[in-house]
Length: 430
Image 1 (cartoon, one colour):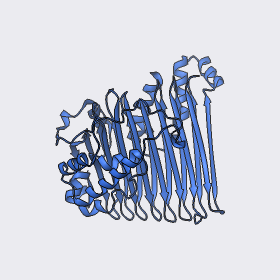
Image 2 (cartoon, helix red, strand yellow):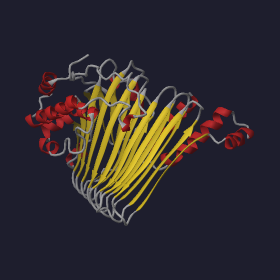
Image 3 (cartoon, rainbow, N blue to C red):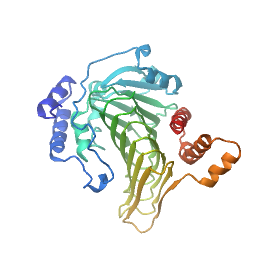
Image 4 (tube, rainbow, N blue to C red):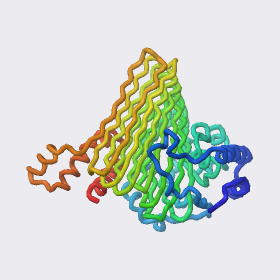
């Protein structure tokens, strides 16, 4: 057990050689961390979640300055790199940026893609005004991340630059210690990029992982973003993500939870300027005793904005999933189009899904719809496929793929889509 106090925080900040303003921000987050309690089932947003087995008091990892060649990377990472189509990528092992490939031609065009620690040294003016703007101390876990994050990735795309191929970050988690990292993405006016952050590990003893992603999308910018978690058994993953969309900005976002013991994703799109658009996709498949929780917010602040959310999942064995989605419209959010749908497939009688779609509408000239379904595999469909000679396991696999196909088909990144299809296929057969 590690004491998360002012002394530990100052030691971490000094070790990372951080500027004074960041230390002061960390100290504010530390105050919130100590003030806020850990959530419990008495809290409405956590009523379906038991954290009694979560390793909340684990010691945090410490940066070691580790560097690796591509051949020395963990095998799981090397396998992913063989199949990625990323134009540039970063690899973190624990808290260390151990390997990076970023073409010089992108750097020459003004793109900055590196670790947060490096960006604080080479481009401090780009980080200072953006870090903590979207995610800071919203709850106990967010405050812990803000105070004690040990590493992170930074992407800055200058005005007008369009990056054709995706940019990727691969975080490989090691066991024995807790991990806290951040992602900061800034797209200037009319910039365009795709960003994939993947989290993976082998099977581990109970391990805590905290992550936060901030996306600042300036007027007219367009971002395709994916957060993909395929951790091994034993990982407790807490992720908070928030995008701030200004006038005419667009976001295509995917959250995929497929691994670990427990994963919770809290994802928000703040549509702050007229013409802003957000597409929010979710994909999850839980088996064994896994639990995946998803809390989403489509927050329409400005008029003439649009959001579309589709989260689809399947659960089997003793697994459990939770979806709680809120569409919130402020008084000035006239002419809003907002859609929300959650669809779930039960593959065993002991699996369970709790789904709570919600609306808060403060404007009167809008179009909003929301809905949710949870159902077992259609026995007639299963019988039809078996009557055509397919074994039951294969027939069920085809039905799961068809169920999740709506989300997969809306992922515009082909290599990522193929990877997710392969992971899902393996889980169905497990």
